[in-house]
Image 1: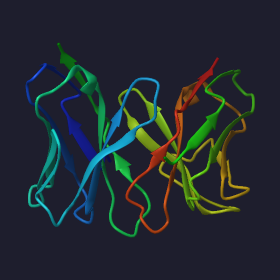
Image 2 (image 1 turned 180 degrees about the vertical axis):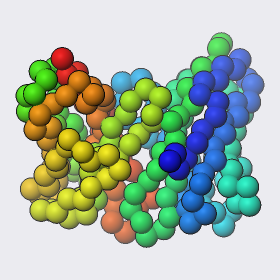
Image 3 (image 1 turned 90 degrees about the vertical axis):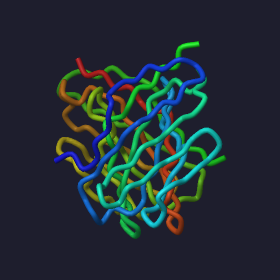
Image 4 (image 1 turned 45 degrees about the vertical axis):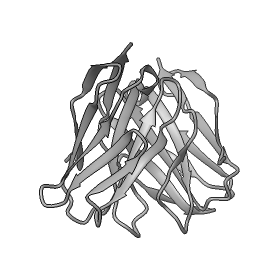
Length: 112
Length: 113
């Protein structure tokens, strides 16, 4: 059973637009949700994360919106840049438990 | 910046052969992980370790063994490589007291022919 689901599988936006990446999860016990960014040929790197006690986390052009009741979250990338073109993974875990569950990823392409 | 180094970066193996993927971290982290990445499947956990000389099974351990001889080193072993094990493998580490961030290596691309 897929614990973490992401949509869309791929997304193309123009430079300057806002990209919205969606994520949902199954396990209500999950309370920590990191997003990882992966460029081709590299390992994923932590981009931004949110805890379930918050409904929003902002870091520059990247914002996570979190809806605990619906078990959904989204990553908004405002003023998208070509350098943001990468694959984005949503992950989930619960505090005290060392394993993370990853979604299948969203491949983002930003056209100049 | 924390560092996780994987070797080799790529490998071609024959079906039925033995493959060992190595990982070395200089982060002084207790936790280490092996993930597998396939197109359309994201990252799936194979094995992980909390401490040297101890390993745990992840979500897809079948066909894989792991070894943690020291805090810094974590190996993934395929005793009898199969075509279905063609994938990119990532090693990661995390801090015991602040397990909020995985530090990944660059990955090993394994092709089993």
